[in-house]
Image 1 (cartoon, helix red, strand yellow):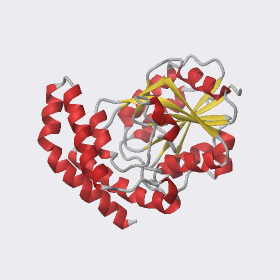
Image 2: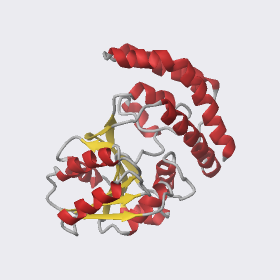
Image 3: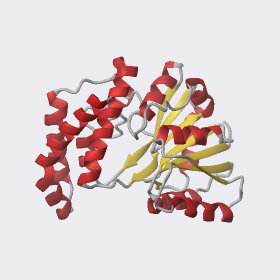
Length: 294
């Protein structure tokens, strides 16, 4: 297996989280060649200057950054892929932080299986209950908490995933039609799996996700999700679950109940309980507004 690895991170207006992300990448003890590529997707928060300073302090073969007009993660990642030297490409979101220093090595070991083209790591975050609520009706994603469900996964999120470069190239890369950060990764995975490649999982490759939770962000993401789901359903009708009453109302309520029951942080309980009905309504409205917009 190749020891030539590229880590690709598309970023938009998350300078502080991106710095945390890159610091964790720096701590990797991988012995092969590892290059890091960051694509600044038109940020306006001084991300560009931070990347310039970092590039000046790093070996040119180990760190590269590119800038593009704000076009969404699919276009940004394709730019990273086009400039990557690695045979294996690791994708991280700019708000995701690697938790173990042997992450790259562990992911690489998962490619020993025959025809493996994609490997998904395990991602955890504090607002898992909220994210489950927001994701109601999404295409299925991996669930390490229920191993029997792994075989049902049709794709994996690129906040913690590794791909063979040749598999991505054969599939045609990310579809730029997905302008928002939703479903563009699952769409690519579906096309790669249709080529005969296999999907593997590595629960020891841990990434911590830092979600930004606010009412404004919630509404925006709900709209983006609905818009992206409209695209996904038009491209992969056989892979798209229907938005039933169960998924829109009952599932979010159960997710919220489990979140409140399990968490021990009182302020989060109060925050979520206080806003839950408002957020359920907003999620339903904006997912459908986004879907209608597509």
